[in-house]
Amino acid sequence: MRTYDHQPSGTIDRARTLRRDSTDAEKKIWSALREARLAKFRRQMPVGPYFADFACFAERLIVEIDGGQHSPEGDAARTRFLEAQGYRVLRFWNHEVMENVGGVIETIAQQLSPSPSRGIAAHPSPDGRGTP
Image (cartoon, rainbow, N blue to C red; front, side, top):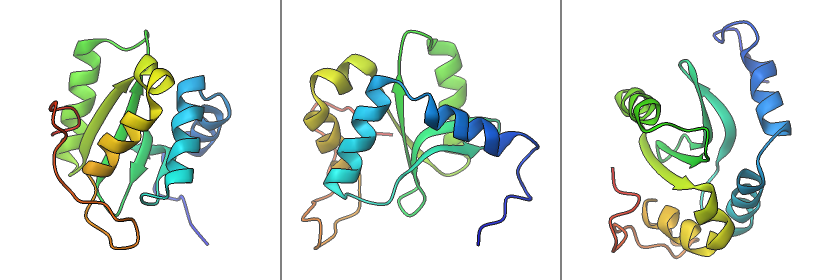
């Protein structure tokens, strides 16, 4: 059984609320990630003072889905913090997920370690998206 003693008070409740109140883009990418079975991802995982939209511990990969409430300065600070914790961060806009979820999943897959069961080759995406 997991223990959450190391989390500040209210963190687990906040994560549950964020999962329950997911945006349409977050719901869509979560469904696609589960269907693709690329790796084990967790939703709204606390990392320091932040909640990663989707995180894969094994790959040290965080996927962020950004909407209109995001600011370039805030996102840059958040990314620096997450990278300092040893994570690679991929960011996608809501409209990217809604209009091209397959392309988003492909970009995520390209950042994962090769796995015979997934048939994924790890290489950076051709347009530079998803590279640290």
